[in-house]
Amino acid sequence: MVSGFIILIHVAACCTAFVLYRKEGLSHAWLAVAFFVVIFSAGWTLSTLMTNLLFEIRWIAASYDSLGRSWMERVIRKQFNRDAIALLILTACELGFYYFVLLGDEGGPKGRNK
Image 1 (spheres, one colour):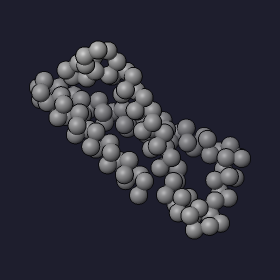
Image 2 (cartoon, helix red, strand yellow):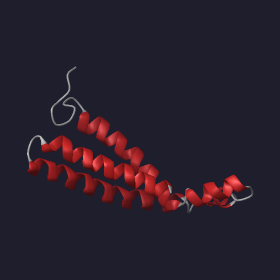
Image 3 (tube, one colour):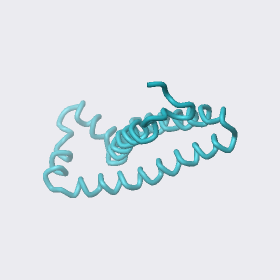
Image 4 (cartoon, helix red, strand yellow):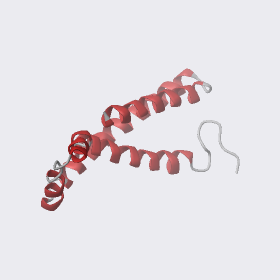
C-alpha cells in the first residue's frame, strides 16, 4: 500500500511536469517526462542498492526482524518492506534534488520572482 501510494505520487508529479512544460512546447513536455522517468528509475535502483546494503548490517536487520510482536508491528513490517523503504529514500532524495537544483534561482519553466 505504501509503495503504491508513493508510485502514485510520482505519476502525479510526472503529469504535473508534463502540464507545466507543455506551455513551452510539446517537445519540452516530453523531455521533462523523460527526465523524470530516468531520475526515478536510476534513483530507485540506487536506493534499493543502498537499502539492501543497509539491511546487511546485523543490528539493523535484527531490529527490523524483531518487529512482529503486536498487531501494529506486524502491519508496519508488512507495509514497510525493503522496496517501500527504498521508495521513501528515493522520494526524499528527489524532493531535495528537485527543490534545490531545479528550482534554484529560476524556479521552473517560467521562473520565480525574488
